[in-house]
Image 1 (cartoon, rainbow, N blue to C red):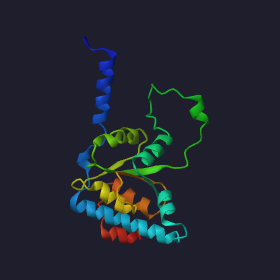
Image 2: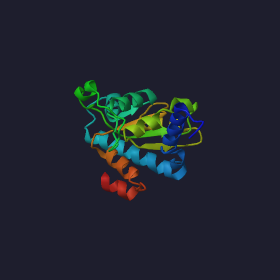
Image 3: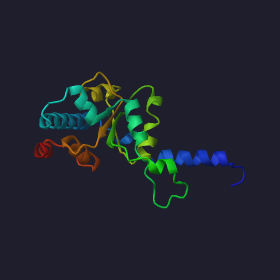
Image 4: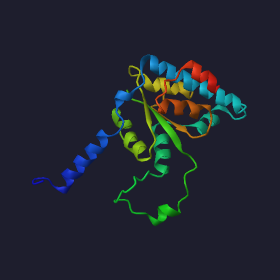
Length: 191
């Protein structure tokens, strides 16, 4: 198109990519949020009991979750980006090909959609999308970070990454990601 330069085309392409990312309209709030958090909490209690409570609580939580924006970002950055089939602008990097797969994979990221300032988390949707890690937005009248913090027994948490461990927590998150409304009957079957 006349009048457009490469920089403006790149910005337009970036804006198009951002619009394809999950939006906050997929937030869990109200009754759905309460059910979601109760289900995850029961999954945490069940998994902790099955592990025998041999580890201190703080260490056990670190094995199950990446807690906080920095920790979630760090784990996502260490995960290999998903390459779309037929993508022509990815060139294999010799150094990257020798790197082994990260030992930690995230199943999903729980993100407080109502955190302030928004700039703290603006990089997470794009980073998670590039790693094919789904986001689950939590919104509770500017108290989403308090609700997420309660899950991992700290004051607040803006972001929590659920690590792939093959336990009850992962089964509950899998149900949520497949659009199954978490209900107490299905939860009882898992536990």
